Amino acid sequence: MKTSLAKNTRAGNQTSVKNDSTFVKCALARTIVTGGAGFIGLHLCEALLQEGREVVCIDNFHTGRRSNVDHLLSDRNFEVIHHDITTPIFLQAKEVFNLACLASPVHYRFDPVHTMKTNVLGSINMLGLARRTGAEWNLPSWF
Ligand SMILES: NC(=O)c1ccc[n+]([C@@H]2O[C@H](COP(=O)([O-])OP(=O)(O)OC[C@H]3O[C@@H](n4cnc5c(N)ncnc54)[C@H](O)[C@@H]3O)[C@@H](O)[C@H]2O)c1
Image 1 (cartoon, rainbow, N blue to C red):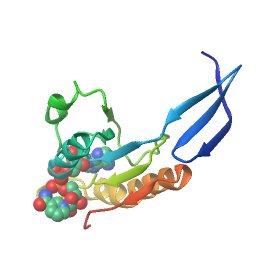
Image 2 (image 1 turned 60 degrees about the vertical axis):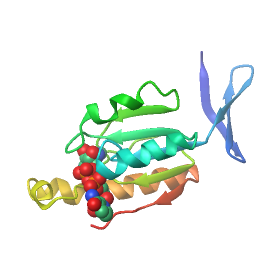
Image 3 (image 1 turned 180 degrees about the vertical axis):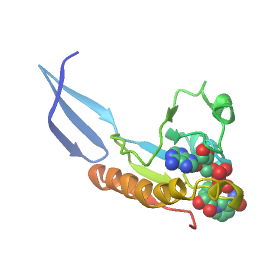
């Protein structure tokens, strides 16, 4: 299906993407959880799914394991993306929870430069996504 993103308008929590002949409506009720395979992120993903929300977990599996989210993969409202947030990602979302941050000194001292990049560049990248898509921003982390 050839889809042009040239005309992409938002109305309420829906977006209309210009197609060759029709407008395809895409739901924008998506919640992004970075660090969703980690300790706090995983519990948040589970709680959001229980509320019936559509959840996209973004994780580089540095401390969180892919197997942590295995039990959620059968839920049609759940997606997992293997991605490091120090690189920008282009997705639509209604809200973003930024939990991709190493919590234990053992882990964040292992590669301090990458830890700083995650906290600064990663947060800037996810903030950019939230601003572009008008998503609510949540940073429940202490760096
Ligand atoms: N664990 C606690 O008791 C606690 C309490 C209060 C606040 N927090 C805060 O919550 C946040 C998460 O803590 P946690 O205990 O879940 O840590 P965690 O290490 O279990 O989870 C962090 C997750 O982020 C991922 N991640 C790290 N860098 C990434 C990157 N560059 N790109 C994508 N994913 C990346 C890791 O793989 C992991 O899955 C931290 O900021 C921490 O300070 C934790």
